[in-house]
Amino acid sequence: MAPTALLHYSLEMTFPFTENRKCETAVWRKSDGALIAATKGAPETIFAMCIFTDNERIKWETQVAELARSGHKVIACAERSITDSAWVGGEPDREFGFVGLLAFEDPVRKGVIDAIQNCREGGIHVVMVTGDHPVTAEAVAREIGLGQGNPKVIEANQLDALSQLEGAAALMSIDVIARAAPSQKLSLVRGLQSTGEIVAVTGDGINDVPALQAADIGIAMGQRGTHSAREVAAIVLLDDNFRTIIRAIAEGRQLFHNLKLSFAYLLMIHIPLVITAALIPLAGYPLLYQPIHIVWLELIIHPTALLVFQELPTNERLSLIQKTHHPRFFNLREWGVIGIVGVLLTLIIIYGYEHSLGIGHEVDHARAMALATLTFASAMLTIALSGLSNFISRIMVGATIALTLLLVQFPALASLLHLAPLHLNDLMQSAVGAIGIAMIVVFGRFRVN
Image (cartoon, rainbow, N blue to C red):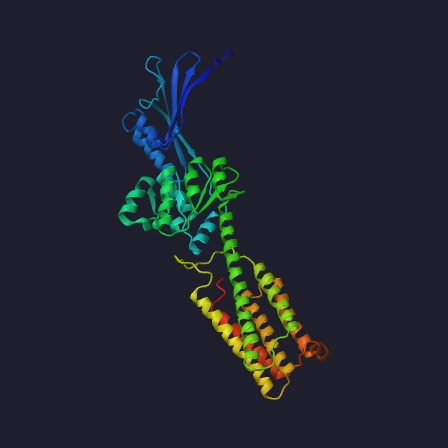
């Protein structure tokens, strides 16, 4: 067999891809001294640089559209020969011969469709911003469920016109932005922020850096992301998985909700505790709480607030939250529930204390009545706020009720605490009052998830 001659190519010059040119060109010198230019890039850019025969361009444009509709990223390739005398070092940009298409498929990761739906249910608007062809972007968007399967797609060069015509708020109706350049991604972020939206941006390349830096929350991909993207981002995903972002949002919302429940519990318990501790002696009655009673109560209240609500399990399904331009830790309804519970529990404790003294019981019995009411209320509020959804909540509720019965109903222990055992009807009265208080919290819909 005759030996095959191998051609050797040496690189003379490259013209890298830019957002304006949308192609990359290289000039090579063959071993025989001839020059050849090869280019690749967006099909519409490469087609404009090529010479086609009749109907040939239409055939390739149809092929590009078919590949794009099936979700493929399409790159066109072309080449041409150059004579030394004609080339002066500039980038060749015309009279190319079309070579063919490269079609790339990036399969949708498992769980992304469910994550997109979860975002929609949680009031999070997801916008896909890509440099791909609009048809490709629309096909992918339909596959992952953006726009509930009917996404609104525009090209990035339409953003300014849309904002001027309909205002920045119109950006919230867009699901996909195709053929986006870095500067246009940045404009999108700033436009959304101008409407009061909190914007999170995910990205992995250098062209994502301006948007990542301007976003309220920049999220870079840790595995395939560039060093620049990771440097400017506030968060780096180690697994490059969109679902991880959703889980992080769920964790954050749960943490905020847990704090709300903990503070609500503390307020609902401390309002009657403080008011009754001050009002009853001021009204001329014997001192209600002695130091040992305060120690007892705090041994119940603070472990409950610190342990029960920080361990509530996270619900990975995001619930819809009401958007407001003036967020508050508690809204008006929640403040109303806290106020009503605090006032009613105060009145129940005062009534039980005064009623016990009025029917001839000693102050030790009246104190036991007040303390039983307050501790039973603590247990019932814990049930109402936590839903007994974790192990520590069940332990704290059981321990609170058991400790109350132990310290109040056993005469030897009760006498050490300056208390007296309660009658069954007294215990029932305290328990019913505590359950009624808890029902206000339940029907007041304080526990929002």
